[in-house]
Image 1 (tube, rainbow, N blue to C red):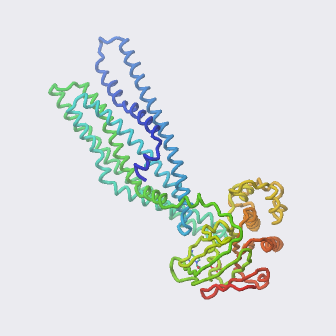
Image 2 (cartoon, rainbow, N blue to C red):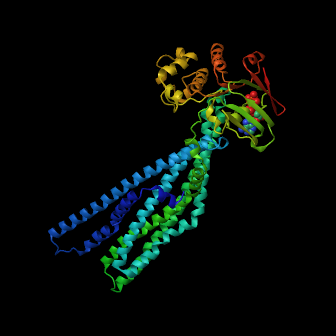
Image 3 (tube, rainbow, N blue to C red):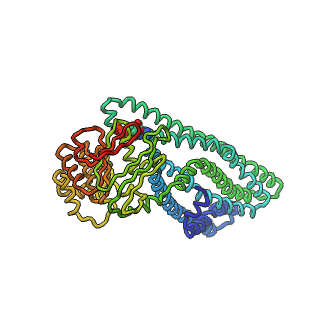
Length: 539
Ligand SMILES: Nc1ncnc2c1ncn2[C@@H]1O[C@H](COP(=O)(O)OP(=O)(O)OP(=O)(O)O)[C@@H](O)[C@H]1O
């Protein structure tokens, strides 16, 4: 994320208007200097009329300056709003497009809330402020040159003094910002654990352990924040001292000119007032450049996140319409992180409509097989793909629905949870499926418009699982991956669900974590995992 990208992201006509408003507001120094240095022109010979005209002009000009400043702020806020919207959406999409092993909820929340806020406050805003202060300083500088070129040159040269500390201490500040960002990610991770794992912590009475961890992460976060503020304060003091020098040296020379009769005292006052509008804007520019530089790592992270994410993959991932896909596993080998292989040289075909039970010891890799079929994980070698009416299909995940042990439920109405992006689904169709799964009876006739809370807090585990199954049926998924899918469901509902599975045309691949000989009879085939091999047999 750099200036050129920023320039491309801003509508040019808005920037032009902003630039004009900045020039208007940039006359602030000249007006103030003219007004106060004119005071010495009044004497006992001046009339009340002259005083009135002077005051009216002074107020009039100042109102014009303030109006320009207001327009500048409004335009700047509008551009910032658009930039924030654009970057937030880019980051949200890029985070969503990350590979599953790189997805980290705490890191993502931190990027969206802290990093982007940092970029808004310490990059976008400051770029505009820098531009404004640069214009203000430049206009006042031209006015100084008009008043007295030689003294003005001195003021100008010394106005660069306050920039020195930021150049010298740039790296010192950047490391403090990086440390703060890392501490913040750690803090969010800790809080996420505390609330997501609340019931486990409650069961084991481990609140003091988690509070201690929270205490450590809060302490670390606040310490890093304090270090960052302290470092900015120290560098700020250096800048202030240097900026005081930048007034005093040229003032001393100007006073020597006055003593020698080469300069009027009121011109020195005008010079001093106008120089304030050169020195402080340039001091701000230098301070802002220092802060902007301190955001470099954060900007680089966000830029690489945006550049490296294949967002189009998500947006153009409309499913191929499939008729009767067959799953082909060809010479597949897989091991986590490239380490020891969990399976090697697997060759298996699963026909459309086949009902398959996957069995094997705990840790043998049953859930991993589902991840590979769904392409949540990619094989180390070999391939898993689908053949539908002779066509090889690549984006196979879209043909499948996975019924999970703890399904996620969105904080939307039940209707929205069920239809997602599907169009033209009538409530009658939804009611029919909910009824078959025993949900209509439990949730009532008005259930479609109900919002069942964060992650479906007002639903039971079994109800959430059945809603997920309803979703798969509504979307006409051709393959159902069931990870001990009916584990939270009572016997009666479980039978209902299985009847629907077994009567449907869908391919059903179910992992049985708890092996039960009776269950086998309902399936067409069994995949047994043992000694890194998968053997598939008809039942
Ligand atoms: N993300 C991961 N990174 C590294 N190793 C993993 C990961 N997920 C699982 N494993 C390991 O891979 C092996 C297979 O895990 P998997 O969950 O597929 O087994 P499973 O047969 O479904 O087990 P269970 O029946 O106990 O649920 C286990 O030894 C597990 O520790």
